[in-house]
Each structure stands twice: as C-alpha cells, then as structure tokens.
Length: 115
Image (cartoon, rainbow, N blue to C red; front, top):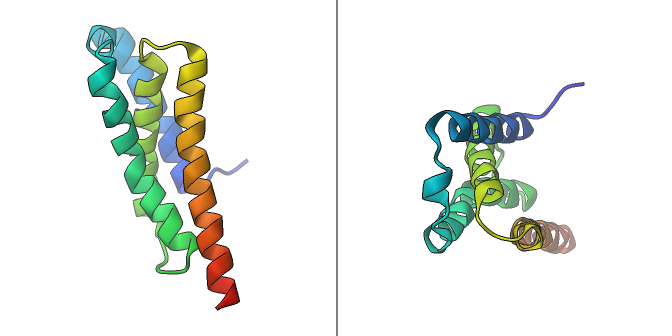
C-alpha cells in the first residue's frame, strides 16, 4: 500500500516526537499547555495552506512540499498527543482544526467550479 507524501510526513513527524519524548523526556516541557496549544496549531498551518490552495486550484503542490508540510503537521499532532489535557479536549482540538480546514477546502473548491 502506497502512502502519499503528506501522509508519509505526518507518520514520520508523529513517530519522531514519540521517540524523542521517550529519549529526551520532553513531556515535562509539554505540560505548559498555554504555550503548546498555539504551537501545535501553528504547526498545522503550512499543511493547511498547502492543501487549501491546491484544492482551490491556485497552484499545484509537489511531493517535497507535501512531505515537509506533513512532517510539520505530524510533529504538531505528536505534541498534541503529549499535552496534559483530557483526551476529549485533544480530540476536539485536532478534529476541530481539521474540520475547519476541510470545510474551507471544499467550500473553495465548490466556488471555483461554479465560476
């Protein structure tokens, strides 16, 4: 089964964070939720912009860009998994952010088709 470049980057980024958490014990730094939540969300921005602009037809993304943005997104998801928050809050953070991005992509795509 082949994975796309962005998905491969997400898996690599997430795996790196989990491995580094065990080796470097970064969990003590991640308990600063007020600082980490914005960082987690910022790490999702490049992949979001890349996907939305590609979906809207503004440009074509290449595999290198997809891998890099996926890597950043994977690091963000990995850090989100380490946050000292209830699981439901983590799911809402990741799912809500993903839902907004997906809606923006499909709305833009449908507007582009109608024009």
